[in-house]
Image 1 (spheres, rainbow, N blue to C red):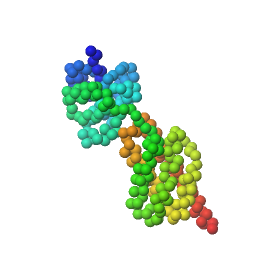
Image 2 (cartoon, one colour):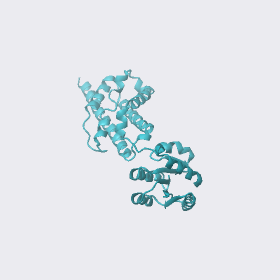
Image 3 (cartoon, rainbow, N blue to C red):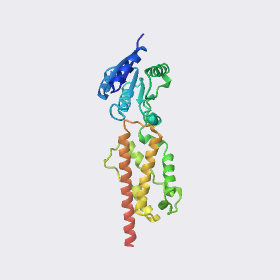
Image 4 (tube, rainbow, N blue to C red):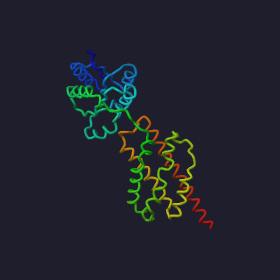
Length: 273
């Protein structure tokens, strides 16, 4: 009977030695890796049934790099992450949903062996690699972001000093942002001039806004977009999330610039009249 192969990635010699001996005594074949580089090489050249990786080796979230590589190279392998911080277990479980489970140290190799056996015996418990780009998340359900933005605006005294309807406040939100993400425009790439953003700036001036108020609305929008991503960590494609976040920041700033140009244009027209 073929032994199930475990890739054990941990930079602590004693832990590797103890876990390797303990797991091999339970009829697993264990291949140790002391560094991220070694683990990545093994993932690309050999086949494994299970990955057991420390989260920190030696840098924070090194384990995520190893898990990410395993999930994309050998998507059917069971992936387990070891973490020394119990208070972070829930957060890590969300962040590392590409892993099947986060195990909190201290944990014995007997318990790990039992978890591995259960995971291997029940393929349905294996985390599916079905991730979304940020654009898809914002496009399929924009309401939480808009509602979160509106709730924050309603608790900002300087903004509520201008009485507006829900539609008047929110009509401009997310315009152009999802389109830029879908087009795959990189951060700092020259994006199309946003007529909607410029018209928004003109409208805000006519409604009585000041420059700080327009800037504050934009700041709140970025916060709410990132909150939406936080609430959807389980479906975020982490291989593209940094690029998407930079693009979001750049696009929101670009739209703010266009809004301010429209605002100042309206102000100049008022002065000329």
